[in-house]
Structure formats: C-alpha cells, structure tokens
Image 1: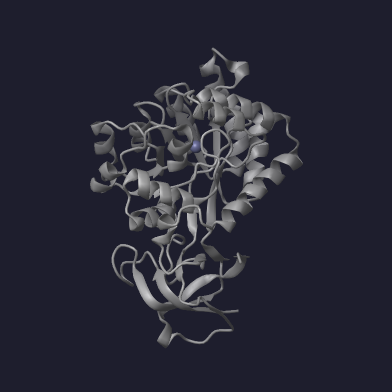
Image 2: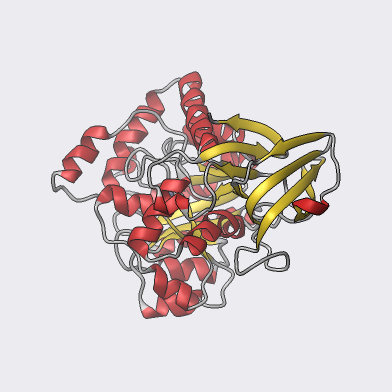
Length: 391
Ligand SMILES: [Zn+2]
C-alpha cells in the first residue's frame, strides 16, 4: 500500500542533491512512500497518486530523529541525587552503583515494562530509531537480560558491561575487565550489535577499555566509546585508533584529540542533556564543527545524568548553549545520528530511505529551538506507518 504525504510547507530531506543548503530543503513538497520506503520526493504539484494520503496542511516535515545514545534499560530513579546536585554537589561516575542495585533487584517484567515505556516516550517526541545500551546489570546474567530487553525495542543494541566497576569488584578492576571481555561478552554478544566502554576518570583506563573493545571487535561487534566526559583523557584517541563509530560526550578535548578526529571514521556524539542535568560546562561544539568533524546529537537518556528521551529538548539546548545553528542541530539529531550508527537508510527523506518522518506542528524546524519545551510533534511515521498522532 502506497502513501502520499503532501501539503508539506517545508520538507527537510537531508539530501543536498534534492534541495537547498545542508538540509536539502524543499518547499510546497510531497513524498510518496511504498513498502515502508521513500519512493518519490518532489513538488506537491507534480506528485503521483497513491493508495492513501496524508495532508500535512502546510506544516514542516523532517526525518525522524535518530537517537544514537541511550541507556533505557534500568530500574529506579535518582531524583534525590539530582536535587542534591542542583544544590551544589558535583556529578561523579559513582552514582551509577545506585541504579545497578535497583536494576539487579528488578524483575524481568519490571525491567522490560519500564524500558518500553521510555521507548514509547521517545517515539512520541519523534525518535524513530533508538540505540539502547546495557550497563546497569554488570553481572553476566544481568547484562544478558538487559540486552534481551533492549533487543525487543531496537536492532541498535549496545553491550556496556564496562560502564563502571561494580561494588563486588571494588579494588579489583582488572579482574572485572577479565570478566567483561570474557564470559560476559560471550553471553552478551549474540544480543548486541555494538560494544561501548566508559573510558574516563572514575571508570576505566585506556588499557582496560582497549582490552574490552578489542575482545568485542573479535566477536564481530561495532565499537563506541564514552570518552572525555568528566576529564581530559585517552578515550577519544582510543576511539579513533580502534575505528570506533562514535566517541560520545567529548566534553574535555585537547588539540590532539581534535586533530585525531579530523578525517577519522569516528563521529562525535554530543549529549547536551548530560551537561544540562549535571550543571557541567558544555563541550565546544563550534570547535568540532569548524574543524569539519561530523557531530551527532543524542539524548543519553539515563536516570543519573540525563533523564530525558526528548530530542527536541536536546536540539534547543544545543542551539542555545552549544552554539549550533538550528540547521546544524537538526542535521546532527537526524543524519548525524545515522552516521554515528553507520546507517545510510535513515536520517534522510530521499529515495530509498526508510519512510521515517515527523510532521511538526510548525511552519519550520527552527521552532524546535525557538519554542523550547513545547510539544511540536504532530504525527510520527515509521516505515510509512502512522505510529503517533498528537492532537
Ligand atoms: Zn551514556
């Protein structure tokens, strides 16, 4: 069954061959979808007929958001820690242990139900592709079940056994790394597409991170790194060395880090919700963009340092606080996220792409930053199916 989406006042294709500027913008446009893919894009006046029609009523249509960094599988919440932090206490990696205890104590049904609720919340805000990490189980059984839950939500699953050293391995981080790179990876790799390591102060050092990532690569997993969030360090260079798809956070970068990223296969994923929610300084996004580095924007949804699934919010913060233009922020939250997941079938609305689109209740995508906190997502299409209608 084919679908004609017409009456589009402004269409963001992210295909520079189709329209204006970096976002490939078309005005008074239409899309035809067939078999869950975009089959035709062009002027509404010349659009072919289809079995079904949606009239966008002059609204702006954008590709569905690609959230390439989330931690949706967990139990419990850390509202009190957040409140204390807002009262002046700094963020450290150690708070993760509270979520680990709650996650281990949760039943399978509780864990799956909570993750599904968050994934639906993200979809309602326009996220049509989501990456989901494990990392709050930190035992072989709890990491494996976290990834089983993640795999019910998305194909973009990431094994993050090396999130922090769990309490029972306190003072013995190398023993824990041996477990992660051995028995835990063996159990988790069948359910994961990616592996990730938190390489930072208070988490894992470069040697430990390299051990885990190399073992994961030998199991056929793609690589991602939580790098340079809390302090300057080796995370970014390790990510580039190993050809990781993405180095995430990148809040503290040296000139050498930036030079290593230029021309590399590694995307920088910025997570403005984390700085917002921890009260930390934002990374220097302009330095990255001006150096020609590919930047993605993602939510980092997790209960400790960024408890949001909302990419319009992240776009607004990136524009206001990190110096991205509205165009750059939208590109990074769609095409940039797709690059960070090494996908070319999402993050764009041109022929052959998945028909994942968001009809905004706004005449332009600029409203995503210009009207912060306002629910602007009108209709979400995923694979040409109407999955969300708000209002
Ligand atoms: Zn994260």
